[in-house]
Length: 281
Image (cartoon, rainbow, N blue to C red):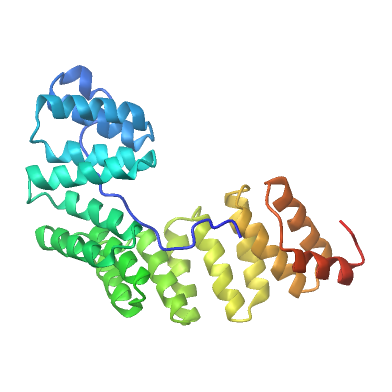
């Protein structure tokens, strides 16, 4: 309906250093890098690009600065510039795993899965890492290779048992295999680690729905919108669930919540709801 978050979750690979006062303390390439890194983490992409560009001007061989500037361009939706920076990071340091890992995500976004897999594999060869295994799993899901994706998510979780995103992604892969019991369990683990994981509540609701557990589905949709009151897809799903449970007034409430966010249910659903509820709005 809204197209929001209908795939597993990527994790971006950032080289972390220092803190906000680094530039004042270190007015050199490292200081500019640390400042740019901090701006990126805060979503301040223009400031990040400016500082990382300064770092590169002072040290043209700093692979991590190219990689993080690429992530900043990616955050602005400037994917061509992001790809150029990931390429440059690899060019100046072919042993820097983050460059391959971040380029793999871009290749996957473009549907160039074989290229993505080569880069995922190279990153993991250089440094086995839970984020790298997670991201390769995402590409494998996009390729329909669910069992291999599940294996990668499991490796990520073996390395980091508190990795909520990997539990969510593995749950998604199980759901694609129509193994809703395991999907529910993994979404539950993601939620246990991060109780504010609205997307996990929504997808667990969908898994419950497929299992015929409609009350549980409604409850999870409710949790999703409690965490994120702007979550249109959760209202959409709950409206349908309430309709099937013959809770027509509640379905109408969800329709109205959706409309306040600027989204609408399908015409066929609204026609049926009006007829069966005896209401027009």
